[in-house]
Image (cartoon, rainbow, N blue to C red; front, side):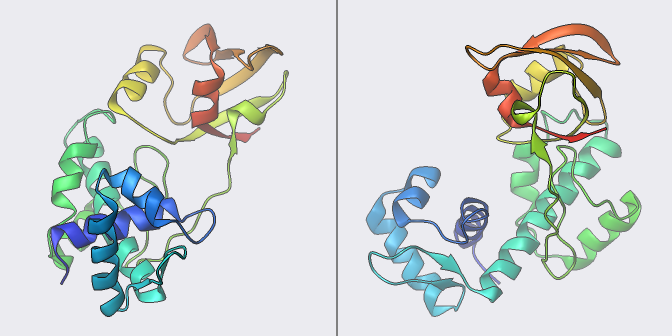
Amino acid sequence: MHSYTEENYLKALFNLSADKGEVSANELSKQLGIKMPTVNSMMKKLSEKKLVHYESYKPLRLTEKGKREAGLIIRKHRLTEMFLVQKMGFGWEEVHEIAEQIEHLHSPNFFERMDALLGYPKIDPHGSPIPDKTGKMEWIKYEKLSSCKEGDTVRLAAVIHTTDDFLKFLNLRELSLGVKLKIKTVEKFDGSMTVSHNKKGSDTLSHIVCDRLLVEKL
């Protein structure tokens, strides 16, 4: 069993190293808002538990055990978010902070029951994959809306770099998972897009927004 703080480090390491498999201690420090000496001290502790590959001045990497433990924490978080949305009627912009607290419960049966009640979902309310019971996560390959071209028709499949304000922004535009988007124009100067979708008329989305929306082409 790991402490609340250790679990937060493991989850941050997992998310930050998703693309390259490693992350610098400085990146981890900035992400968590914790000073470098404290980060290094925790990395030594996690290394002793065989959760992290740690050497001074070298990138940090989770061990296979560390990946599994981090995946299980993320599983609890994302299952909780889905339960809050599907069974309790919360908005997708309301669930993160609640799930942050519940993910630290050490009760496998509790989360297995939650999983069963939900019908064993594969993704959370934001379209992110839910790790399985072994902590393994199947990454889904979507592309960013910002990489699509004029004339493409796509389905909104996931949202990344989410904040409450960003999700509220999407709510106001009736942009939710499953919405079909037709790209009408792409502005060459700043990458903004004019799109039409099946819940609302036309809308103009900035490049920043398009970069956070993951889609699959239809």
